[in-house]
Length: 190
Image (cartoon, rainbow, N blue to C red):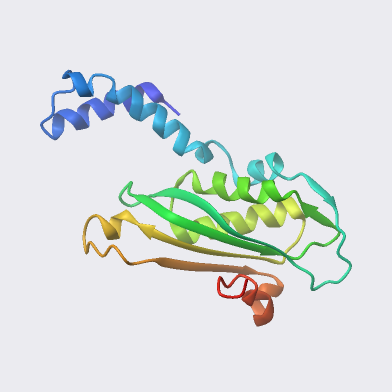
């Protein structure tokens, strides 16, 4: 990430909106914004394959049945909409997968979700990225990802509907055809 270029352009944005980038409260804003973007968009530095390699620590599976699943719910993430640079917030991710001989460390699932979200994104793509990374890391084609979230491009601008939530579901492998497996992701079935 080119932080110097970000600083230069943020200064230009401040000037374009009529602010004085040299006034007390804004003097260091270009540098702060550059550091913030480097942190919240960390995932742009890695491909899905690289994230799977980073967080692909697995353990021998205690599961013997092909239909046993690992489910992790209520993983908190946030991201930024690629259309408006607007915050996607109050996002929760539910992930389920069927292990085929190996299981991921539980913290790795949350880390994968976090890193996939740290990009300019669409909620639909976050779900697909998480499914792709989990599939590679856990060596399974049976993965599902449910995401619920609010988008400030809907709540703070445009329609300004602050109660609107977006729900996306990504299903791969057995989760595409097995309704009972998909029900594992449902928040009402804890």
